[in-house]
Image 1: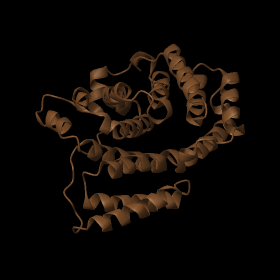
Image 2 (image 1 turned 180 degrees about the horizontal axis):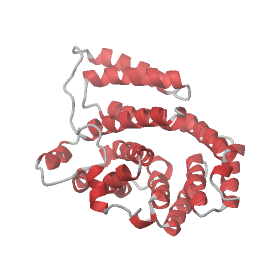
Image 3 (image 1 turned 135 degrees about the vertical axis):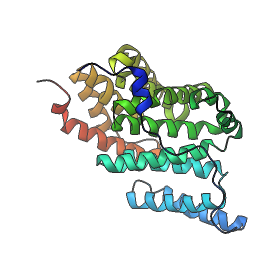
Length: 286
């Protein structure tokens, strides 16, 4: 069977949410009431390694957002939190897709706080990729987590959806790199490492470039386990390099997490490393 033309594939992908700041849906609250609610959410967030605590935190953050839809910190926490629910806690495909699609919805609301970006889209002659030039450093966290969720959701949904959203995720992460190249422990380099390995060969897969980005991310942030887990899962499997696969994952499993502020995420990466090793036979030819 021949591949459909790229233009047809791009036209058929799924879309999620819209770029708009919601009007307040809750009764007006005092600054003190909002601060108290946000503090409750933050306390639960600190224990996000517990799935139930993370879910409770997200409910609280949504309540704060209902009071103030222009609070970038709260909107950003919702984008990141729903992403982490899908990436670090859910194991079933449908649950992951649901969490990541919700993350994307919040991401669009978060990015819509940038009025220059939404104004460009409203003109009708700009798309998400070209309008990304309007983002500023204040948008970096929202861009990064939205792009991360969109990439994971699209990949799990299928090739057609991946190709449709390719220009957006590429433009968004490029903008993150321009504004803050080291964001979230060399996040852009880690992202590009995955990106160039995960692409189909006809759409630009480049395993040499992927390795260069992973090497850069690992050198800069050796204690962020996601750099090695993603390297093993994406580059090592695509190149059928079993030795590098095992080495990277065993290093993660045997290490002691040493970045306190992202301890839950590091522990989740260790769980992923163990699952990947346990299922090694699924990735390598005998």
